[in-house]
Length: 168
Image 1 (cartoon, helix red, strand yellow):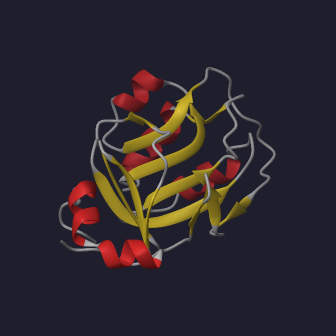
Image 2: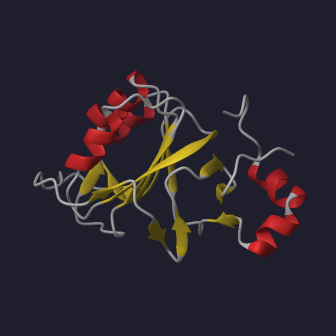
């Protein structure tokens, strides 16, 4: 694990060849910043769901070991896939961040947690609870493919995905 998260702009400046090769990708600037941890980095765990957060909870119940959960919620803005209870669970279990291609709720609670959260927006409605979806599969967010085990770097400038852990 990286001792300190790297600044995404510096990472981009120092890694032009991996960018050209597609080994380092930037997510589009569509995410809002939540949570107390404004800068975070770690290996990725993926989950693909749609308006159902049962698998999100299942993963966050595992020990995070400094990982970042990437939730592909299909970009739905009709309900929240993450709330205050799950953000607290993530903090307790050692997850450093959660990126949600969808919405969150309980924003004040999430902002009190020592975990970094990125999401499209907030929405007061909770999600379904059927358990549909897939864990640890490649996901695609706005044309960017993200695989379980890759590295994610997030700060105020944006979110980077790398095939390997990076140094500057």
